[in-house]
Every structure is written in C-alpha cells, then in structure tokens.
Image (cartoon, rainbow, N blue to C red):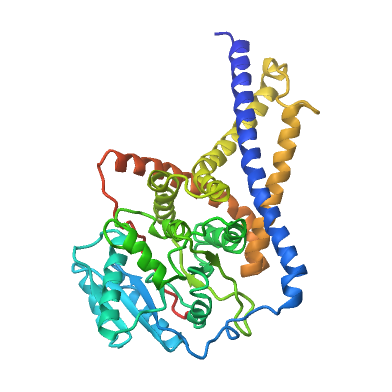
Length: 466
C-alpha cells in the first residue's frame, strides 16, 4: 500500500478515536459538574436558611445524659499485626460509657486469636467463625451478628446501634456520641473516612486522600440531598439495631449480610432504603479540631495492593452489584447507581484519552518528518465542532482538577491539595488497571472458576494514632 494511503487511513482512524474519546469524556465530565453544582447549591441554601437560625452541632453538643448501649463489630482475618494495637487504642480513647466490641476471628489464625486474647479487656468479646478463613467479610459479620444476639439474650437488653469497623481503623474518641444522638432518627449514620497520609507513598497511597476527601465531603452528601440510598463505607458506620434485625428477618438465611457478597457494605445502604430507612453521611466537628470527626486508616501503599483492593470494589459494585440488586428505587437511586457503575467505563476511558494524546504526538512528529503527512488536513480546524468539544473538555479538566485540589486541601491542607493535581494521573492509572482486573475477576466468578472470598490487603496501624 502506498505511503499516502497508509497516512490517510491513519488520519481517519485517529480522527474517529479522537472524536469518540472527546464525546465520552465530555459526557462524564458534565455529569461530574452536575453533582458539583448540586453540592454548591445545597451548601449555599443551608447557609442562608438553616445555619442562620441554628448554630452548628458539635460532637460535644450531641452528648446525651442517658446513652444507649452500642455494639461494635470488627471482622479480622489474618490481622495479628494490627488488631491488638487497634483494639487497645479504641478502648483507651473512646469516651463513651456503654459499648461492647465483638471481634471476628478464624480457627486457622492462631496469631490473631492470641493477639485479641492477650488484651484481657471485659469489653472485648472474641468470636470464632465456624469455617477456616478466609471466607467473606460478610460471613464473618454474620458470625458477629449471631454472637451479638446471644449476648442480648443473656443480658436481657438490646443494643441501640451496631457499628462497623475494620482492624486497621483509628477510631475517633467522640464517634459513638454522634451515633447515639442520631439513631434511630436515622437508620444509618456514616461518618467520613480520612485516609492517613503516607510520606513513603505519595502517589499510590496518596491518591486515596484525594478520592475520599471529595467523595465524603461532596458526592455522598449529594446522594442524600437527592433522596437516593446512601452506601455504607463499611467502617465508621452505625446502623439502627432494629433496622439490622429487620434486614436479617427478611433475608432467606436469617442473617443481615449476604455471605456471597464482595461489597456487603455498599449493598447495606440500598437494603436500608428499601425498608424505608434513611441514611446520611454526617460531618460534625469536635471541639478544638479543624477537621470533622472521622475514622482514619492507612490505605495500600503499593500498586499491586491498590489494584487488588479497587478491583474488588469495582467487581462488587459495578459488575456483581448490577446482577445482585438491579436498578431499585426511583430516579435519584437509578441515577446514582448509573454513576457508580459508569466508574468502570470511566476508568478505561481515561486511559484511552492518554493513548489518543500519545498518538496525536506521534502524528505531529509524522507531519514534521513526512511531506505527505504535512498535507493532511488538521483534525480539529478552528471553529469546528470537534475543536469546540476539545476546548470544552479542557475546561472540564481544569474544573475537575480544581475541585479535587480544593477538597483535598480542605481536609489535609494546601500542600496535599497541590499534590492532588499531578496525583490525578496516578489515580486514573490505578483505577484503569483495577477496572481491567475487575473484568477478569468477574469473568472467573461467572464461569464458576472461583468463589467469593476475602481478598484483603495487608494493613498497617500508625505508631502514634491521632
């Protein structure tokens, strides 16, 4: 084939790739801007109305004279490295008087059993799962639920709320007072999760800072404002005990968590909404603190660990979740489900965008080196529809980076906020790799080659929790 024909084919192919990618990025970008505008409208309205008449609540102002008993569930498979420090810190720092911690352990995890047993705290109850680990996290939670019910029967008193935490969580001392004040008016209370900065992993672990800062200060709040189901993060989350009992009663197994589910926390919010309960992400300051009452924890610091964690999230939410819960609820619920499930495509589309940008650089080199290539028409002449679309995408990109930097700076200071801009590249690449891994993982699940299992990452606990 003559060189001019090859160049013409290259030109047509690259033009179509550029057009398709630009349209996809524009659609997803406008969707994100819509959420941003809803957030700012809600925030402005509340400042003009509610906060002019009422002062903002604090963790101290929510304290009750008669706090109800609260159960804390901590599933722990192969967590001997962190579970002792986490539970010691929790029992020393929690300022709430009436709570009991149920810790889920496995018969083939003697180190974990020994770490919990060495603490000797009467507020802690070790619960041994029936089968060797790892099963699923939901299966472990069901064992904890059964132990909770047995304890209630012995004590003759029901818990007011059930709180979910993981073995690596740094729990805020004021947390349980907030749950006590808001439940049962709210069926589920989710507090923010703030990943801990890791100086040794500014890019991989650091990108979690940016994503959670934006999600737990804006996206989840907009879900609630629209009346959609609020998903649980699986930690720093409290559920009304009666609501969890209702969920268990309606389940085929009589258990509140589906042992075959990879993302039981995400589905929990939808189950609560289906039963008429309301969930909310609550951002409350503690006296003398600049940031909200939140749970902090280290997130994966290596590329492989981050991909494995996020691929599990994507498999459970965007793929298996589609099969398991379908499209329940009204328009707001379905819109939010669509946003959750588009994340898989959005991650892959971002990599396609990088690939097209690289191909455009190659095309520029060809035009400089080959006279025949220089005669090809430009891809996006000034004033053309494609040129306007590309300029629009450039504006959407700048807006997105500004939002990410702003929310990260609000949670962690301006140094991290500035890092969030270049770190968006790492975020996109990790998410794209996780999306590809999720597709392969889901395929093996569909073919029956693997069974759902607790594919956890190695956890760390800070030497000096803050």
